[in-house]
Image 1 (cartoon, rainbow, N blue to C red):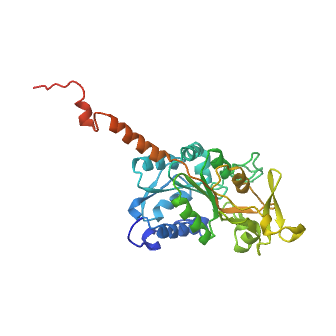
Image 2 (cartoon, rainbow, N blue to C red):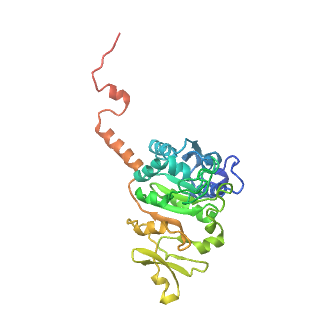
Length: 336
């Protein structure tokens, strides 16, 4: 944290070159605001991306940036964090870049719990390469690479993150500015791998993919904003809630069958057992609301801290501490 008070303008750079109406514009605005509110100096931040529409983002932030190669953002971000633990690192990937060619890097960065802010912009399509279906496209989706509809089920990013023993998972809507800023700040403040799924629209190749929650009115009806320690209520007047039914969840209406707010489940993002958190993350319409906000946030040792501590521990036990000293530990001779 810097003593200087930073403004949004301090983090802006360049002129974004995305299609008009692309969700990347809205997300970039939220990221600028989150960076300003977090107050980390621009020279202490690195934004690292892979390949894709969203991966152009490093050009539009006034920080260190690295536009890397397809699917390798997590690998490069890991190296940067381990080599310079004081850097705040934002890793930017799309659903294709992050979960297809980059899928293995994604799950292992999460498993290792490297202190990265891993942003997954999910528009369920390959946009940069002109409209092929992606790992998150729904079964039956018609695209240039699936003209008769896909015959496979999609990845759920939450399921991958939880399966890789993820400690932080959150979700937001790209055009939902205020909520996105809060989620990004929570991700940055979490020590460890933070995965944020950003539901984002592609106006050219997959317009309306998140239509049910794209508007404020839609989110009031079809989404639930989860807050740790708060009852799980949603609806235009908070008239609906979530209760447990057997091993699953059910939607109930307050006032019906004697149900009151006391019967509604309370969100516990810090619970080590992720059973309920995963059920919340996998909820889908029309039967259930889409969960937004911080769904899981638990503490655990980070890979980068463990590596640093291991190096210091080993250095303390060695007779040499640099290359010159290493050379002098063996027999030496001088040639004249």
